[in-house]
Length: 173
Ligand SMILES: [Zn+2]
Image (cartoon, rainbow, N blue to C red; front, side):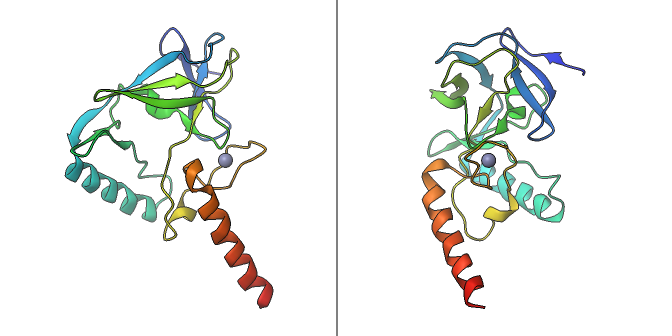
């Protein structure tokens, strides 16, 4: 299988979760700063505009319209949709081994556990709960505790409540 080395810690390879993923080139200890999430620093307004554009594309074809925009502060977003931002290939999982950390206006990806060589590196994309479109972002991480959708862990109770409500409606019919 074709792999591309990214930096001293990581390489890019086809993933079982989704398209390409980032994997450990060697064992990575907990709390290692692995890679920078680089991109274009833009205004919050521009970030919102780009997100809406991507969402519209995603509605037409779920293969398109990936969103790489993240919030930096009240005035700035970072759009990671650039050819040199390899960190954007990191997949979402419900059971992660990495997290985003922010230093000033820069974003890095750091390990939250000891990671074995050739293990896939995963993050939570921290999508906020939205009853209107959560189902457009299914999760295929394959972890034991997968919640089924790409969603911020803090919002999992909201999803569970919503799904219970739906189940009740189906039982009544
Ligand atoms: Zn999952």
